[in-house]
Image (cartoon, rainbow, N blue to C red; front, top):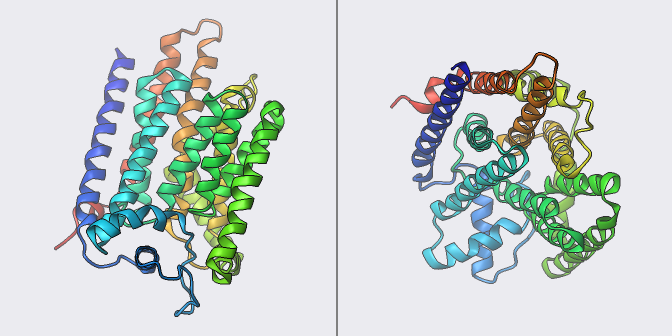
Length: 369
């Protein structure tokens, strides 16, 4: 009875998240003006691609956003057909976010065989994006990067042999040319293969060398030295040590709003089974790499919420899988039952939704006129 009530509460919370996310997107996608310098920069790069103008030139401002060509290449198709309107770029970012949630649902359902956890995983991503970013409909390269990176990891998980390694390296390389944070996913896959499946390490490494290394050399020659400036110089120059910013992120997000997912994930590493081993061990590696990327992003001179939101995706993916493993372990104890472990799983899930809902400022959903 209690488990059924908790399951219903989880599905209700997921429905509320979808409704709130839709409200934020409808409100944000209609603005005819650029939300910030990043959105303006993406439109400029996309327009230059459409008109066959040089993609990168000497910056006209002191601190331009560091943008890679992946997102503009995708957006150029829409801009060429519909004209330079921001809603086209925002639609790509929004669809990428929704596809990201769907991918997380598929992965969690396949790993846990639990529809409630799968649906909750996707909705946790939507809730985290809406809460951390505020306006998830703003054009950003991060959602597209995360879709490509997660698809690459999924290919490595489900496709056997050298084919999986090559497809994963192709998708992860494309993600790296969309946003530099994708390098963390590529490293996570490399570490996983080194520990767990060295037979596919060689095709994966060769694929990265061909697609990522060769692609970078080709882009450097085709786009000129200012491509290297945006790809390397700007991100490195923006780094500085910010201890208070790091602690605010850890205390406010990792251990605060997302604390239930964080603690559950940490507890899963204490289980007798090694969660980072076996076919499903790829996801803990991805989770650790994603959190490391988010922690490094806090050290940027101009940290952006979309960049920090990578930890939301990681925990929304790894957290439910960890919940499932911990509940299975609890159910195996003497005098324990499967329903008891499932009830604890659902309670933890509902508590995480409560933590997210309690952090939503009323002005986010109901702004004053």
